[in-house]
Image (cartoon, rainbow, N blue to C red):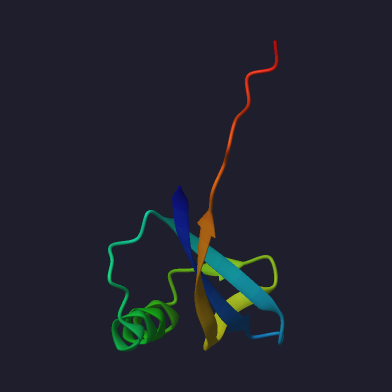
Length: 72
């Protein structure tokens, strides 16, 4: 089972940009995630092809299960 924390931002041009964090530390606290996202925006370090991050849009955890079958 693989989990990914996906952070969604609105860029300066009104588009959506995403950052993914593999295997996030749990439990995930919404207030901590939001504060971290706001710090990322304020730092100006991250940018995308759609411009600089301007505001927080949302966050979600994606939980993926993979079942492999041996085909003989």
